[in-house]
Each structure stands twice: as structure tokens, then as C-alpha cells.
Length: 295
Image (cartoon, rainbow, N blue to C red; front, side, top):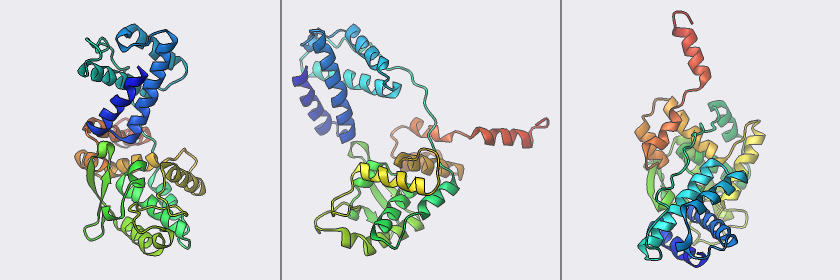
């Protein structure tokens, strides 16, 4: 089974254009599956039965894996065996009957407008790293970009005349997202005052650079957001995705239509975007109290 995993991942990368993070997650899931089967003396893919997969899923659940991760692993396994069928490695896909677990969709964690303002005003603009970090935070809240999209953003992706940026999303899909005035100001400041002194190689296309002149990685951005959230006195857990959630929620609260938000977030299905249409329970209670005749 192990010898078939890498060709499958190559197929997903080259033919399907799946993101690097998805490929990594699928590799981990399939390696765990192969190890599980090997422990049970199942060495050939045509020996695998639905019951074996169910046992594997149960093991993953018992070791505390999140339902969302289990669902993703099931998808990885099903796509893998579909690939094996196409390649003629198995005669029949016996796993097509296995379904993903139904999940309770968690409401996204968001921070309010005041906390966002505090967060965006924390960076020290008297330092080049402070200027850079200000630009990162402003960009993330202005566009709802994923952390992977921020780290792969290139200087040529931003159009300052028309005030929009290109984002490369999952599966290398591209979309255009408008930039607000504050984000444009922060990015202009960074490109003129900080990036030239950070850059060690003119050929580096990535927009955001570290002190050593190398492109920032995902972990760098996570740390930046976390540290500034603590400095801003935000007590809830804040991550780059929190800014993405807040971006979408604040747009919808302000009256933006769902289709526009879907386009800006890069969601394929609008059902994914609909999770942001939740209304805070406190708002519901307030509305009931104000307007119901017996409130």
C-alpha cells in the first residue's frame, strides 16, 4: 500500500491541483492507514475490506481525533481507492458505501469591531518589523485572506491604482479581492519604508519578508497575530483564521450580500459561506425584548 500512496499524491497535485496543506494531510492519513493495515497483516490494497476501514476510523476516534479530521481522512481514503480502481490496482471499490460522519458545524470564532481596531493599532510603526506587521494585519482583515494566501502573496499581486489584490487560494485558484484605504496605506508604507531594507535578493517575489530577507512562513504569521492579540488585551483565542471569520461576519453584519462575501472568501459552495449568517443570541434576545408586544 505504501508504494501506491506517493503516485496518488502526485496525481492530486498535478492533475487535480490540490493545495500543499491538503496533500500533507492526505499523506499523513494514508500513512496511518497503511501502518494500521500492516499491523493486521494486510499488505495488499485488494485485501482491504470496509470493515477494516471502519476499525481504523474507530481507532482514530478513540485516540481523540476531531470529527472534522476523521471526515477529512475518510474522504482521503475514498479518493485513494477510487484512484486505485482507475489505475487498475483493484477490481472493485468496496469502500464506496462508506459515508463520512455527519458533523455539527461549529460557529466561527470572531472578534468585535473594537477588538479589531485595538489589534490593528498595536504595531509600532517606528520600526520596520512593526510597519510590516501592521501591513499584514490590515491586509488580513481587509481581504479575509487565509494565512497560506498571505505568505504566498507576491508584490505584483497588488494593484494600487484600482485597490485590489490577487489571492491564490486552495487548488491554486485565483480571485480578486478589493482593498480598503487603510490596507492600501499600510501596504504602501511597508513597500516604501520597510521591505527594501528587509530584502536581500531583488528576485524574491513574496511580499512579506522576515528579518533575514526570506519569505515569511505560516508559523511566523500565526505568531504575529497571537502576540499582537495578547498586547491588545483580547482574551479569547485569536488566530489568522479569526481575522478571516471576523472579516466575513462584519461584512454581512454591515449589509453585504452573501454572494459577494462568498466571492471574496474564495468559497466554492455558498453553503460554506452561510455559516457566517449566524446572529448572536444576545442580539436575538435584544430584538425580542424591544419589539415583541410581551417582550
